[in-house]
Image (cartoon, rainbow, N blue to C red; front, side, top):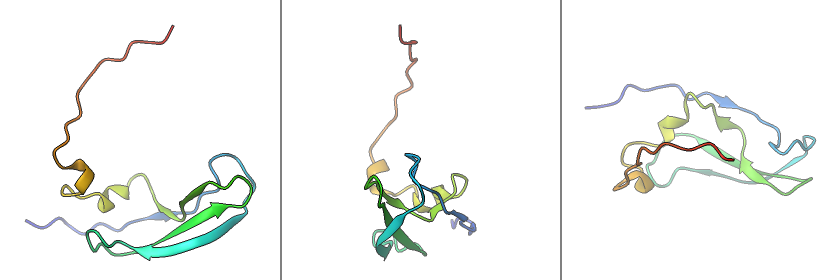
Length: 87
């Protein structure tokens, strides 16, 4: 059974730590694990050094890159627990 193809939307984001826009491209690569389409650019904030993918898939479309057979998901089970508020 094949999954319908979904268009992946990308968004450019500034450093989540609030730094001014000053990114340096570190590398651009592709998916070698599942051979999914697209190029991924890793940038480094010149102010704080944080590295991240930018542009990145939107929260609505990022699931495309994490199929059911994505390695870290295999054999895992998330337990449902109730969190108590911190005092």
